[in-house]
Image 1 (cartoon, rainbow, N blue to C red):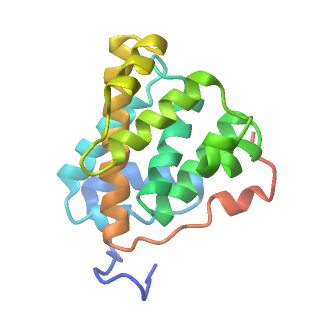
Image 2: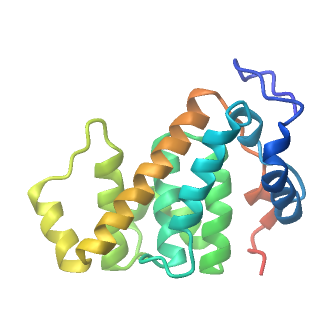
Image 3: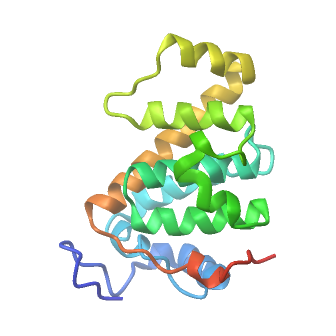
Length: 189
C-alpha cells in the first residue's frame, strides 16, 4: 500500500516480529490493516498495544461487545480517524447485526436507537475524548447510577486506548481501508 496523502510513508516490508499479527489480519480481513504499516516501525510497542486491546476485547470483559464497538466508533468519529471509523463501524455493524445503529452514532443524542445506558456511556466517551476531558459532576452521577466502579474503570481504559489509536492514525493520515464498505448494507455473520 502506498498512500500519496500520508506524510509519513507506510512500510512496504514489515518486521519479522510482527508476522503472527500480520497472519491474523490477513486471515480475518484478507489483507494487512493499514495502521500496521506505520506501527510496524516500533514492533515491541505495537505488540504492547495489541495486548492492551486484546485484554479490553476479552470474552470476560466488563463491557458488552456491542457497547465496546459503539464507544470505539464514537471516539473514532470525534478524532476524525478515517481508518478507525471504518474498522469500528464494521465491528459495530457485526455486533449489532445491522447498519442502522452505525449510521446513527454521530447523532446519538436525537436517535431513538440508543438505550439510556448507551446514551450515558456515549456522553462519557465524548467527555473523556475532549481536550481537556470534561467529565462534570452531573455526568459522574449518571455514570455511577448505571455502571459499577469496575465497569467505569474498564470503560475509561477502552476510551483511552481508542483515543491513542485514533489520534495516532489521524495524525499520520492513515486512510480508511474500505472494511465497512464491504457490508453493502448487511453485516457479515
